[in-house]
Image (cartoon, rainbow, N blue to C red; front, top):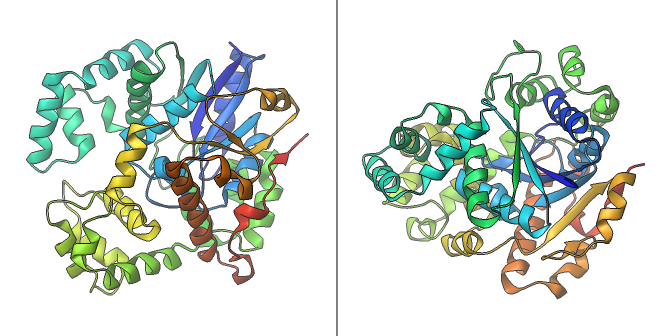
Length: 395
């Protein structure tokens, strides 16, 4: 085994992530650990709290060898689109294995469930439950008669295996048991959740004692400096952007964006008259339209991601792999040739990309620019940082 892929967000990087990378280093010391990381926006449908440039550097300092950006079209998608895009990138970059955090490490059980996900009987039941108003995750859980889907990491793990069975049948899997609650908001676990860390950063605006104990020492001072410089997201700014766009966009225009269906655009426009984005989502939320889905819809509106673009992304591989950071172990790997371009110079990339690749490139650039506009420190809200960034070589 020469390469192990890790599909991740590192939002932010913490001891749980370091634990996974350390475990892989112990199990397979000679294998390169290659992170495919969400960029400026993440799957929960909002900007990552820190820039992808900072998060990529921390990943290397925390035990990764190479960090590649997952294009925004996939990183902000549903569990199925996220998993499919990431696995097709794993295949295009010729990786041997995939590791992921999961609330269960029973690989045989996960593979068995993943095989049943595309059975006609399962799909028919899934459609029935969705038509009854259930969310995608709830409908799948009931159709498969399993509690594994109760946890978001396990659901993503199943989507990785499901996509792997179709696009990369020789891929090996290395689940790493997750010991903390993905959405736990308090520090009750040895390995805290990203949710708890983001809330702590947002509320305190500094690297508190609790945060220090949850972050690897190798990155703690760096992260502290980034926070002190205000180079992290103020989510109120982002929510105001979504709310403003919702007010100015007519229902007939909303309907073209991803996940807007069944007349939800009319309820969305009505809710946009509420005093805040939070109040608007409370107005719209239902069993079918969960907060996570509404967040993604807000992202699609903000970044101009339409249904036809999402459909194209689902049908093809990611059109490029954007290198963010690497270390000495990863340098040799960069010399290889792969099925898709390995982008190091952002400005030159469109010249070697397809039309869809150019669209992905534009959306990635816009996502970084929008995230920057949300930073606390006005001086850090500069646009087009993608064009001035050089992949970080960390010795």
